[in-house]
Length: 186
Image (cartoon, rainbow, N blue to C red; front, top):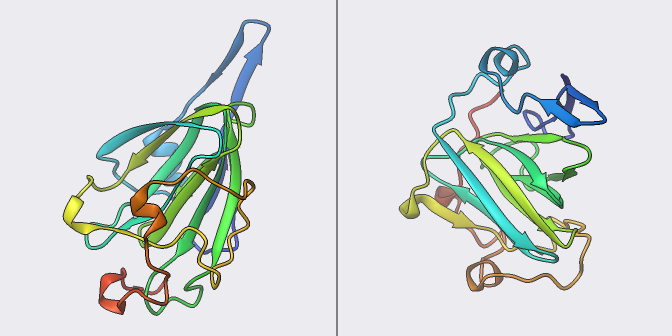
């Protein structure tokens, strides 16, 4: 397993070991000891599966309180996956990083607590799995506008399919600081 640091401290790309031959392939999608040794000492409490069509953009979502760390990977198709540091007081506040996750590259993305997460489907359809460190809590959920000009995410498909909630989300600047997760320092 190879772990790649991104421009955002704590956000990691994971290239798991994949063993393939003419029959197909085998890979571990998660191993607590291996991932802890790689710097992901988390306990996961919920798994989610998202099925979406080409052009669908989901995000930018977060929870506060009850922030969720997420380990994400694609079972089929391809997505452009993004995280934005929204921790009030963070030196990288408002910065984003993204990576393509696909059934071909088998990559995983670790998005730490305190980051907003979103993805856009770039294949005809995609199945995205994410393991979460906290359960979903409707009262804690929040969203940041997917195309906030101050964040400047370079989405691959210009006219995405969005939910009403995502279309109406406020910009990061419009969010009250107490609605955002705090920065605890590194």
